[in-house]
Image 1 (cartoon, one colour):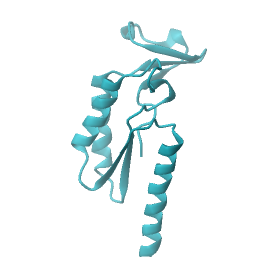
Image 2 (cartoon, helix red, strand yellow; image 1 turned 90 degrees about the horizontal axis):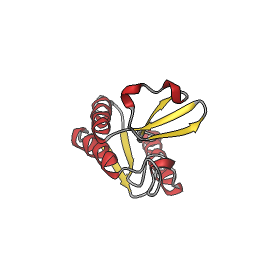
Image 3 (cartoon, rainbow, N blue to C red; image 1 turned 120 degrees about the vertical axis):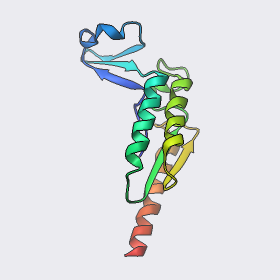
Length: 134
């Protein structure tokens, strides 16, 4: 599993965004979709919750973390780029993941072909292990 798009919360059009989020960073994807950047505190909580759920896995589980960005608008130079918020997500996950969960960190963004190749390689290696055990 990975953490794609955890840099954002999705709303409908701009009028659907609650006033309580005034002052946050927003990106209007299209007239029907407004995205709000998650904060470091929100990401740390997301990381804890994801790790808690992953720790219940009974089969082989791999977490892949794209340190270069979790979405197209989270990469360096883009509107949602926030290394501190991403670090809060990654650090919380790593702190709470059990030893039975494999962790792969890469210095690419989630949309980099190298990240996709590595994810595919991880999956194929696990499928090969399962086939060999049958």
